[in-house]
Image (cartoon, rainbow over all chains, first blue to last red; front, side, top):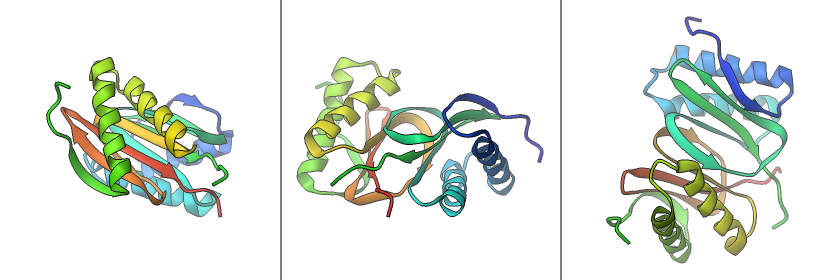
Length: 95
Length: 94
């Protein structure tokens, strides 16, 4: 992996899951170009759906802001190279 | 409203809800500067939680890609002014 170390900006995720998030991001950057944010996000989200159950959301980019409700213990926001990564599982609710 | 017409990129949403989203985005841009992406996202998400039930997520920015799972009938991605806006309701756990 050629990337530098990821910097976590904010999280309420267990350490092991954080490491998985950064590993998935690093892996995605090996597979895709840095401009292909959607493919990078897709790779990470699918990885998390597989490992930790469905319902994960992933946003990747260099300029975005967002506001969301997430399940407890399932949120991480970090920076790796020129990109920012947001991974979370949407909160469950009654319909 | 000073913004030009919004351009919808992708959507899976009733026409009336689409219109709500576009109206809210336009209203948000009257309140906030285009650089305050998080405040704009907060404004839209909170209003949708209030009027269409909880669980909405909103992403606003000039440069991002995403991959999400959403509820049937609860997704819209559109551009207004210089911003792209993604609004969806995350799917509940099975």
